[in-house]
Amino acid sequence: TLPTVEASNTGVRIQYAAFRTFDSPLESIAQHGNLIATDHRYASARNHTGNWRQFVAELAPVYASDPAYAGHLTQIITQYDLDRWDGLVQGRAAGDHA
Image (tube, rainbow, N blue to C red):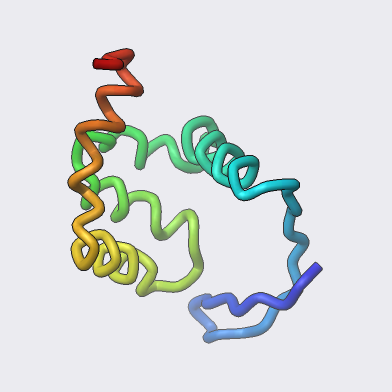
């Protein structure tokens, strides 16, 4: 259990929350991917896997309490041109291993 800063319509507060631990970064990444891919809370975001901006817009309000989270993600994705990997990842997910 660790302190975390959470935003709500009444303001920002510190809340204690339980966090999982993992044996490796790979295990953490795999679990995160599984969460986003299967949890019902992110179903509307998964309807937009071909449009990362819409995916982020749908995911952010559910995933994070920070109202600026979508903007933070968008800035990182555009700053580092991370969407350049989308075609490769989508091809792998579809079974295209060429």
